[in-house]
Structure formats: C-alpha cells, structure tokens
Image (tube, rainbow, N blue to C red):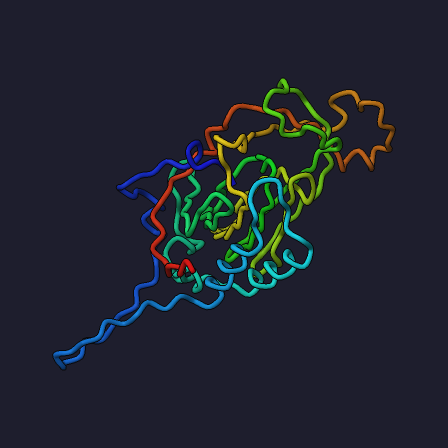
Length: 279
C-alpha cells in the first residue's frame, strides 16, 4: 500500500481501536501425564500455499507475473478466509457498533517480507481511508477478507516515465479504472505497473480487513517509494488535445502529486497469526 518507513508508525503500546485487533486464542487442555508433547503449530494450508506460490511467481524488480501465475494466485486468495491469518469476525474491531473516537487510523501488519514480495494485512476502521497513492513497478493482489469498502482507481493515460522521480510534480491525465463499492467475499483484484488501476484509494464503509500481496514491495532504496495524489475533475484543466463528450469525460481526471497526507499515516502492529514455513 505504502512504504512502511513513511506510512507505518510502530507503537509498543496499543491505544484506542488498535487494542481491538487481536488474534484468535486457542486453548490447549492440559494432560495429567508427565510426558506432555507440545502441539506443533499448524499453518493453514491456504496461507502456506500462498507463500509457496509467491516464491515461485515473483522474480524481483522489473518482472510481471504471467497470466497463468496471476490466475493461480487469484485462485488461492479467493479461497482465503480470516481464520487463515488467525483472525475472526467476532473480534471487537469488526463490530459495526463499536465507536471509533477521533480520526480513525488504519492499522497494518506484515506476515512476511523479502526483497521480492511481501504479504500484509490492512485493518480499516469504519470511515478509515487509505488515500490515493501509486505502486511504482509493482504488481499487487488485494483480497477483501471482511467488510465493505469503496475503491477508486486510475491508470495514467500516458504511462511513459509515470514513476520517474526526477520529473517535476504536475497535473497529469489519468483514466478512471474503478469507482465502486465492494463487499466481502469478493474476487481478488490485481493491479499492474501500468494498468489495472495502479493508483488507488480505499475508504472503509464498515470495518475491513484487506490481505495484500505486493511484488516487489515498496523500497526507497530501489526508487519504489510511494507517491500521493489529489484528484481534479477532467473539466478543470485543458484536455491536452483529447476530444471527448461530457459523458466520456466522467471517465477521466487530473491527478496532482502532493505531499504525504496526514490521514495516510498508519499504526503498525506485530503479526501474531499462524507463521508460514519458509522452505
């Protein structure tokens, strides 16, 4: 979603709605015999299958998964549930009637991360927002595990040098890809370096949990930092020589790069769900 070093603030003391993001506790009955074998943690098959597939698919910067690989990852993600990552819809965070004081922050946790891909979960309280941002040179799979959210996304009309950090900030024409409300369980969405809605925003209508697979992950060192944008209606500026009707113009907008918005800052928490086996 966004660079961890910029967006995620690690906090050791959880406050407010953060304390409501908890993991399912499994009670183990004690046996009276002396030789008690500790149970071996079981990784949900879907989570381990996802990890193994990601290791095979993501080859590093400059590569995009093949269509058959995209289909396989989507199949795995489509079948994943909250329980696969140690969560439950009975947790306080997901209760619609639990009030959130002040401006609700999004919470973020990392399941796994390497230089080729990362697996992470975003927890959005009701009315929580991840503002319009891009994914430079990245392929991203997003699975809405729980909740209802509005997603809006764009692609550049001219993707040439779209993520060149040396270019001055200017308003650029983008084509609207998605502007809809999604409710879980919904199909996995996929965005690519120059298509599929690479620039998007999330707005939670109810408390939401989103599982993201990013390949490769954000990296300031490798010039894959996150940029943020402000939308302007198509009619606000010159059309750049593109003639279109009023109805067609609704499918376009001008995006202006801006500084990191205050509501883009996230609170990071430790992942306490099932641990994958790195083989």
